[in-house]
Image 1 (cartoon, rainbow, N blue to C red):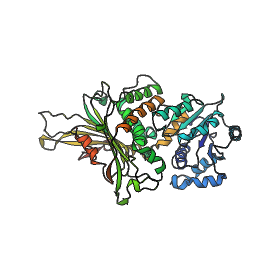
Image 2 (spheres, protein in one colour; image 1 turned 30 degrees about the vertical axis):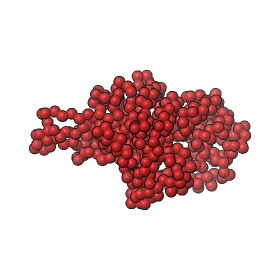
Image 3 (cartoon, rainbow, N blue to C red; image 1 turned 45 degrees about the vertical axis):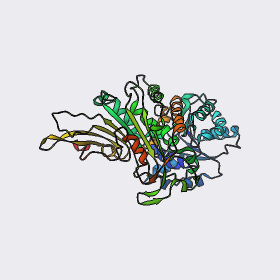
Image 4 (cartoon, rainbow, N blue to C red; image 1 turned 90 degrees about the horizontal axis):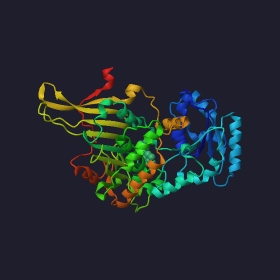
Length: 487
Ligand code: BG6
């Protein structure tokens, strides 16, 4: 099904996000013939460049490897480069240029405006966006994170935005919500009766949510050193994952039902204590056979920086469903492996009729890599009626559906183009998450050291061991049954 005709306007088009994420996402929509003939892509940048020069900068072959030449050409035909200085340029001139492009492409007045810029640059674009309001078509504006850097700044940013936009025109991106396996948390929970009855404290012992990265700060020290893992990852991606796991089934239809329940989760998070938090900072070490410097030796990082590159917390959702079930969240840079997953660990049941060595059931949602889900359960060992062993039923997403799963940004763009807000955090969710994270930052001890290439600081192991549990770095299965093998 094709999407509505619309003009896509990208501010900050010469930046990395455009070439790495937005254009590849548009490429896939082009390939699937979802874009109408009247969907020009207007790329705005400050530099004086011809279209040809701009296109060269996009390094299409690098970011869309194995792209189909004809599809790439069709996409390039949609692109226009518009030079405009956000600080100096006059809003009337901007409007004139956009109107001219609209006529040139015989477009509708619908406009998808993507701010591929830090949200702090919003002020400079507000008056320009203001000129693009029109009764003849809709206007949708997409914001990238970080949405503020604490509760106060998030509120003031929001107040600024609302001087030119209505809530239904605003899309705040958390790219984790565009990931296929994150969206599948909801399907797993709400389309599978076998899990519905056991989703809560009566059956679930605890939940582990991990987003581990092998990368360091790369070239983003300027941003990262001010932000740190808590603001960069916990405030948004990890708390979103927690919200999806813990939310009540939305009763109201439409996007607000889902967003109401997500907000209710962060609003019922129990106040953290210092002992619930471990922050870390990487020292030098060996990551996947490469020796890497410690955080404070990275280019652009202050020698005395106390910014955390790792954070682990023990959170509680104070609702009837989850009271006293710990949610252990952790994320860090320069860890041993790159993986993002959620492990739902069930209570251990022993029954005299079966062997004593049964293990807790577990659902693993593998967000990346090896996207899929797995279920660990106990079976009898062959020929040993008093011994059990844990096996794994494993669903591999690409084995089953093939390699064409949309990347997060393709889903994000498609959702905006369809006017679907469900996978975009709402203002109340963002404010509640900042409130939680502001307290976290205020009471946390200074980061402890961990070696690059490790699983994180030992103090984070203690955080969970104290409760008699361990981080599950490896899957406990000793056997795999793939669903594909069932035909
Ligand atoms: C971003 C963070 O939001 O998410 C980065 O700013 C982080 O620091 C990235 O590396 C991780 O995203 P993904 O999709 O690679 O897991």
